[in-house]
Length: 328
Length: 219
Image 1: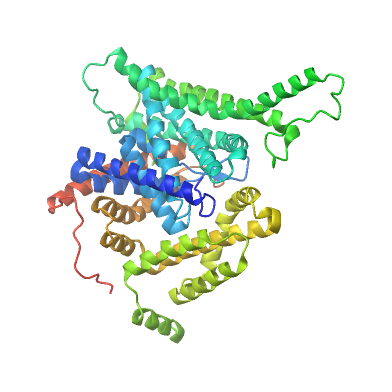
Image 2: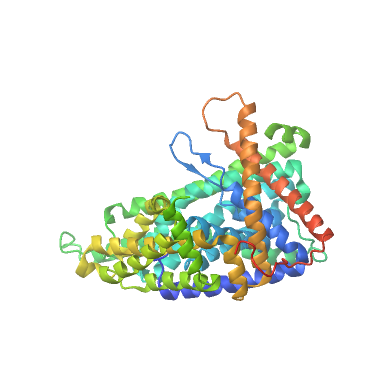
């Protein structure tokens, strides 16, 4: 998911770079105000934690491939949105410099996608669901759903940045493929995030970030916070529905043309190609449907697994000691 | 130490550039390479020769660079084809040369970054960036991260080894629940370590900015 150098155009690099710089400066100023001289130590050790956590490989049995945690939403759930974004930013800088993971000039775009969009939007989704469900179950399901959506939204952001680099005609195509591929990655991220959050909830629930509510919670206040969360979820769903919209429009056009000239519906009827360089025109419908189905299945699986995992909080009392013993 | 390596170190120390200059040269080179026209081999070859000279002088093993590049190219190759499909040069040059050109540009940018980091190391890069105006908080956070990256990496490896030693399992794969629990425990330990480190730093007069000696002892 790290964008290398040479993929985005100069204009896109500049736009994403300036946005990322602004976001990073604001995040640091917020953190300094909230955590004061603790900022440096907290950010340093937590970035090191995310780096170490990314070294743990999860095998996708029975396939001979493995993946690792991205950790954006996990960091945001544990430390708060701005601290989470900063942690991911520091990790991205170190990954770029030490391992060449992600380009130097694409650092801004990578931070925008994974740090700002991944953590901030992810946190808004998490908080909306957490407040709606409530309790530890809300934290668990909220963090899992947010992890899944954050991966999808980050991949959609890349698709838009790629399209803005002179590939506008292939926006829907890129969006469809990115969303399809990242459904699987997002599911893995959601499951790992959920399992880690579940563990922390059992062992040290006090470490989960919980900002003090500002005054009395009113329905209007909840709605104000829920609105961006709902918007972000809608945007995630739109990523899956957008590819579906393209062949549908062409289908209508095709039908209208057929209706106008019903006698010459054979070879003379030309179906306008929505994507000139697209080689799988015949598979367009099935691919779009597959993308939408993948999105639906992904959402249902995330919520289903989250609900299943959260039963641990209701079926039996959590036992911190036994959980610690279980691991090391 | 072989005489060859000694000579190389002697050249490096005699003609050592200021860290800030090296740090500025790296993004400048990457910008230049990214902005070079797609499909033209000569400017890329010239940039390659300059970089090869720098790699030779730095003493970094080219095999390390090659391995890293090959590892990343598996993913980047796919992106390069996607980028090439939308480039106007494809009409005149064909897909192959455009893809090769994009891959070459990426390889040069990657090599420049890895070589610079190999020569300077992360702490010196951060110090040079600080001298160039990087604010204190991100700079210090990066230094603390670099310090605890190794500590927590070792902690994570130790936990994994301990778990393997106590599990009656064959094969290398550990289950997702166990691994996630391990990450959770690593988070708890990291957070607690951060608290301890912070308290220890406060006891030693920490005020939020990393104090530094005037002269780097390694110079």
